[in-house]
Amino acid sequence: MYKILVADDHPLFREAIINTISSAFPGSTTYETEDIESTLELVKNNDEIDLILLDLNMPGMTGLNGLLDVRNECPTTPVVIVSAETEKQKILQTLSYGAVGFIAKSSSKQVIGEAIQSVFEGNVYLPPNIMRSQTVDNQTNECEISPEKISLLTRRELIVLKHLTKGEANKQIAYNLHISETTIKSHVSSILKKLGATNRVKVVVGCGDIDFNQYLKR
Image (cartoon, rainbow, N blue to C red; front, side, top):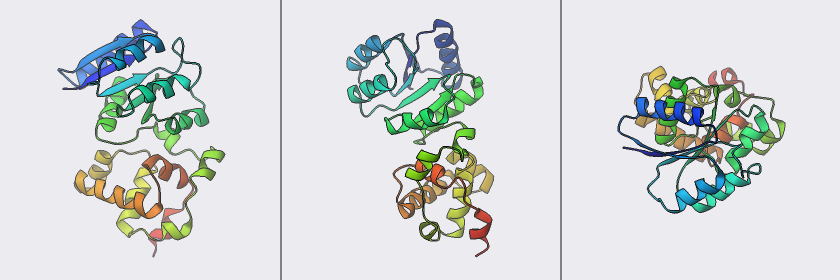
């Protein structure tokens, strides 16, 4: 099973996260750290960790520099930020610093479990309200996708993209469209390639204000 590091300076929150992991992923091994120094020391001496859940405001983090330090120490281990941060721009910025997801500390046990599962399935996870946000101007400009590229998508790919912009994971999209998750993964890969995007988050942010009905009428 999985080996997951919970890096957070609040013992009660660490306990809550570990309980969630135990329920969602029985048999998994969890590790705990409470500051950036001990986190870096642990990952340096343990290269079998499958996932790091990292608090943005632990002692020693100094903004997003702590995230960079963790990514530099273990570049192949996925890192998900777990934080009370609410500023959309900063949440999106964690992705450009190498995180593969963001989980709000206010999330329910079910949401946290589903978010972790989504990351294990190879997805980038963001809260649905962030995925749907059309107010992050700088990020949207950086990820803006031209109508010409959107026109390259097939009707089925447009439908999948529409679900992506709602913050849905592959498994949920497959369920909603009554097709296999493998097929969805294939569609997502094709969408990324045609739109020239490196990950699904950039696609979602860049397509946040698209009128899909206009394209689906073709």
